[in-house]
Image (cartoon, rainbow, N blue to C red):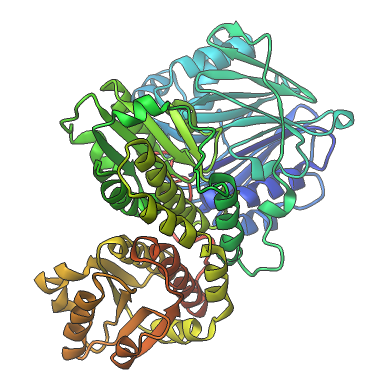
Length: 613
Ligand code: G6P
């Protein structure tokens, strides 16, 4: 949700910023801009649309300098347009600002500044910031004091970077509720970076400091100063950057989404290897809760958004079935505002790939305000959600760039499964034999996923059919009800085909009215207790001439015979089956979107990391 990048150093500035913005494009891509300081003068280029349109405006000649800031936007205030694109400036253009977040009191600030004679040219909340800094400077303050005093007046969430002609050797920054990191290149390079996320500055940056809420300061070539309030940090924690370049590049894949789908066998293997030992003992070494606390939890509330909530719905069933723990799973945005009745023995679980989702973070704040403990499953241990939780479980999926979440989802489901088995041992719930059977089975997961990935033909055939429909239904029961929600979410977010997921049993209570020859149903029918009931749902569709696409266990001839299309998955017990059924649905969504000519990695109107509520 908006990406920021800043650079001071000797490298070609427009290219460093442009490369950085391209890597941040997953955060928003409706307009982009760059401001550069050259000979103490700021020049700006902006463009509506993706970074590629900005690139066309950057004529190599004349547009370079020693310091610059860039921005890729996901519109909140004001439509996507060149006028509303960042950077925004004060009236003389001597101060340029990029911003991620929302300034909640911008109307009051705008009125106050307008009364002083400041003229606004955009519809954004951001434009108040350069005018505000300007008004502080006009009152006689130096740039540093003016910047600090201005950010004190901002309410809401922000990550800000600012360049100013009066102090051309610095880029000022402030972080409050939106992600921002500062980083350095090789020692000899004497260069510094700012970014919303690490991929923007890899491979150039070698060391990083993760800024905290309330931090502000400035970078200079090869150095920085950070303040919390008026207090300067004496010791800044600087860490080596461990992510490799290939982790943030597409390699030979056409899209990040496809690369990330294909990474799943290795990621599942990594999680299994790190979490389960040869005696089937499970480890969550990074998770700070003691067994004594975990054994006394009376209820769990999982709160998350989008794909992470779909994983959470499966986690709820794991915790209920394996630990006999009353568990709810809720949208963070609902949990946050519906004022639920919660006892003190409730554990609140947050799940978030990015670790920055504002709704999930707000849910965590709500839990903490009620004095509840929070455990979060995150794919970024330096994220806001990780920092604000009492304990954290690392999803270990590696950077996920494609806007449609794939590998993070299966990592979430697998981590939730292992956590529930871990909890069941502490609470003495699950019989030893059952535990052994499940853990023995899970070890075959990576090769089973790999086998699905090798057989694309039936999946592509289905996608070729789906590309021409305008609506599709996804049906599943119990563990695969959430799979149906996730399958529908994947299809609609990247192919723009209307899709809804339903619990198979609920289907006859309304959604069945949608069935026609033009509206296919994707029915998830793995082996297990609910197979027969799901077949009944399938027959209900068939009787109404609806097309059936089924996801079945290998060799299930009965379902094959009543399906128009089918994809076979290897046999795995029902609770684990969502880890397999997810794969064909990810691929079906992917190929359908590709065949429809959609921009798979950057679907319209979406952003990967949504840092506003
Ligand atoms: C956005 C993304 C979704 C994602 C959701 C939650 O809406 O487009 O793909 O599932 O945020 O993200 P999180 O990072 O918290 O898992």
